[in-house]
Each structure stands twice: as structure tokens, then as C-alpha cells.
Amino acid sequence: MNAIADNAGSFPVTSWPLARKLRWAGILAVALFACCVWSIAYTRGPLGLSSLWVASGALCGVLLTSPRPLWPLGLAIGFAASLAANAVVHGIGPLGVALSVANTFEPWLVAAVVMRRVGDPSQLSRIKRSVVVATLATFVACGLSGLMAAAARDYWSREHVYVGELLAAWFASHAVGMAIFATLTICARVEGVGVVGERGHRLELAVSLALLIAVCLGVFSQTRFFTYWIFPPLLLVIFRHRFSGFVLGTAAVAVIATMKTAAGSGPFTLAGSDVDSTLQLQAFLVSVCLVAFPMAAALTERRLLIRKAQKSERDYRLLADHTADLVGRYAADGSRLYISPSVFEMLGWRPEEMQGPMKIEWLHPDDRTLLEDAFREVFQSGRDVNIQYRVQHRDGRYLWLDTKLRRIRGLDDCSVPELIYVARDVTRRVEAEQALARQARHDSLTGLGNRLHFDERLELAVARYRRSGQPLAVLYMDVDHFKRINDTHGHAAGDIVLREFAERLRGCVREVDFPARLGGDEFVVLVEDLDAQCAPQAIAEKLIASLGEPIAAGATSLRVTTSIGIAVADTAGITADALLRRADAALYAAKQAGRNTWRKAG
Image 1: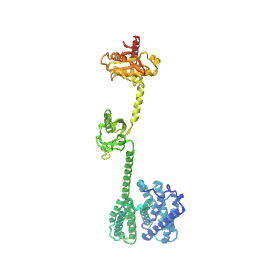
Image 2: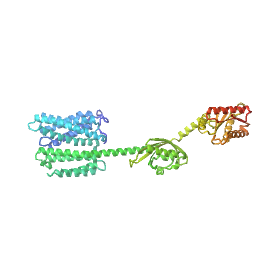
Image 3: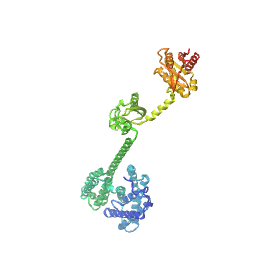
């Protein structure tokens, strides 16, 4: 239902112009007076009471859909309308005043309890709580007002009437009227013309109501007990039109049944006495409400759940279709069940091209096992998994995706798990991290590993040597007379010499060897997987020979030599620092031998 048009939270009554207040009060006064006169004139029972009291239900519905500051005025109008109608029957006197007080007290108590315990009764999401609270409040209010009316009638009326019968007749008349017409009033004030059905279905509702009214008139125009014929067309109206069908259908049944019975027609006239006839009528109306309302409430709740599910689906689609992240759903066999349109912007593939079995060839060869293991772990353990892997763009380049995988229940079969994933393009971030990592472990001038990187590699190599005894050697070298080159030709020439030295050093080592620059003109080579004990010496000889070619530093050709110290791990307890110190000592020995040569630590 829509929000209440006159709700105090939206339209404070203080902002109402006087003309609007007068119009509201005038319409309410005429409507309540008409309800009171109709109930007294056309549904009056044998005890002098109405068989169906409409005014209290109508007033309660108005109070629940009006700002609280208007309640005193509404209650005053309700009291005046009831007093005027009672004056026609009982004359002006204390009995009419007492009955009017009871008629006014009843809708006030129900409205006050519902507003305090439920809030806005027009919200379909609170329909269960509204029904429970309103039912209990109606029983209490009708019981109390019935006691007030019975006591006043017994005290001021000259007619002798059993208080129990009077109380029962009052309670049933007012409770049924409250249940049917308070609901009808709330729907009419909230929905406006929508109370007669949704657009496109109003003609169908009118035809269904016409059929129901025809059946009711037929049933209550004869004396055979065929009241159950009313239920099929009533339930049809409710099934097709939910709450609109309920309020209009039950109101039509109540009005026709009450007026016909009061006129001496219908199956309830066979009860034997007017009192029994009235009680049977009221019991019938109660049964109509008990049968019809749960069905209307269930259908309305079902409609609410469908709308909620549709809204949830629309929200999900909106997010999935417009997010920059990649959202997908996988079956347990690895086939894609859904993939968001963002795949086109991210990877260049259209969603329909990505449906079906996973295209393993689009994954980077080094990451295929990683993704398969992640899928397997999620399906088996149920734990969320975050991974980063590379996937090929349509143009051939690889992108890094940061992906979260989560297992869910299958949408079609809850016993079959599925997997959803959300992937984000983090290529720039990963490349930046890789660049920073490279800068942290590589020399910016030569591109070789730096001291930090070399120390890490050397520690790992020594640890492997201790476990397996695999041969290990370190070559420690520097550029002979490098300070003289800097002082004579400048630092720019010195940088050229260092870069060319590093390049020639790369050409002299194997791919498995690790060359690095420790700083200044000092270089090292970590040699593992030695083919023979002479392998370090071969590298040294090769490097010395490669420096026989002059190095061009601008317009100057420089002849550069190197001195090299070699240390081979030959004891199980050797440490990385000890091995490097031995290589440094061998380098010093090479310099003492005249430079441009190598020496091996003994």
C-alpha cells in the first residue's frame, strides 16, 4: 500500500488550511451519521441494537489514517453522530449519551493500541502483527463498550433485557463491524480509487463482485440454509484481487446479509426467535471473516514476497550489470552459468562468448593449476578464497585479476553447490608492486641484483649446500683502478664503465648463475650446480678475456681490467658471511699478484 496521505509525519496538521480541516470534518460527520442511521434503521435487531454497527469501524479507520492532532475532533464528530442517531431512537436522554460514549470509546481504544503497538497499519510488511494487535484490541474494546452499553441499558431502559444477551449482541455487532469496515476505511483512504482494484483489472473486479452480490441476494431471498453458496464467489474475488477483493466482498456480504435478515428474509429467520436469528447472522459474519481474512492475508503476503524478490533481483541486476568489477557464477563442473556485462570492458569478450565450459587456454600457463586448486578448495571446504591470477585479454595481453571465490547453494537445486566470484582488474597495481620489488632488489645503474638480493640468494644457497652438499662458489671482483677512471674521465665515464662491465659479466655466466653489484665497483657472482671444480675459474678467465676489448666512454676508449677472488664452499658448517669473507680475501690476493687475474681461496 502507499503511504497514508494524511500521515502526520508527512503532512503536519498545523500546516492544513482551515478550509481543509472544515472539509475533512464535514465529510466525516456526514459519513458517520449516515453509517449510524443505516445501522439503526436497516439492521436493528430484536434487542433494540443494530446487528451490524458500521460507524465504529469507519471511525477507527479514519483515526488510524489521520494525524494524531485531529483525533479529538474526529472523536467529537463520532460522538455527535452517534448521539444524533440515538436521539432518533431513544430520544435525547442519558441512555443515548451513554451509548454514544460507548460507541466513541471503542474506536479510540482500538486505534490507540494499534498505533502504539504497530505504528502505520497500512504497511503490508507488518500485516501479521497488525492483525494480532487489532484483533486483541477489538475484543477488549468491544467487550468494554458492551459492558458500558449493557449497564446503561439496564439502568435507564424500561425494557427488561438479559444483560448477557445484550452484551453478546453488542459485542458481535461491533466486533464484526470493526473487522470489516475499519479495514475497508483504511484501504479506501490509503489506496483511494485503488481500492476498487488495479488498473486493467477493475472491470474483472466489478464482474466478480456482481456475481457475489447476485449469489448473496439469491441466498438471503429464500429460507433454505444454503449460506455456504456464498463462499465460492467470495473466495474467487479474494483470490483474484487480494485485499481489495476481501474488503469489498466481505462488506457486500455483511450489508446484504444484515439487511435481509433484519427484513425477515433469509435462512436465519428459521432460527425460531429474533434473538437466535440475530446471533446466527452474527456468527455467520464472523465465519465469513475467519475464512476470508487468512486467505487475503496469505495472498497479500505472497504478493509482498514476490515484489520483494523482484526488487532484490532488480537491485542485483543493476549492481551486476553496471559495476566495473567482473561478477560471475560457476557450476560445480566448472561451467559458467552467468557473467556480468563488464567482461566486455575488462577482457574484450562478450558475455555470450564466455558462457559454458571454462576456457582454460585463456589463463596464463603458470596460473592454471592455481585457479583449479582454488576452485577445488572452495567447493570442498566451503571457505572463501582470494587469489590473483592472469587471464588473457582478447587482444592477447595478460591482465592480473584479484578474485574472491565463495560457495553458495544452487539457485535451481539447493543440494548442488555453486560458486560466485567477484574479480577486479589489478594489473596496474601488480605491475607497480613488481616494479617496486624489482627496485628494492636490483641495482638501478646496471640492472643486476643488489646487495639485499644477493644476501637473500646466498643464504638460500648455503642452506641448500648444508642439506645436499651441492657444490657452491662465490666470485668476488672489482674494477682495477676504478677511482683513477672517475678522477680522470669523470663520473659519467665511470658509470659507462660499470654498465659495460655488468653487461660483459652477464655474458660470461650461465642462466642459473646469479651476478650482482654490491656497490661502487664491487661485483659478485653466485655459482651453483657446478659441473666441475674448475667452473668458477672458467668464469673468471672468461671475464678477464672479455675485458680485453676497450670500453668506449664517449670519445675515449678505456682499457679496463678486473681482479677476482674465488671461494668454494668445502665445509658443512660454513656460513654465508664466512664464504663471502673468503672470496674477499682471495680478491685481495689477486690484487697483490698484480691485478687482472684471479685467485682462489685455499
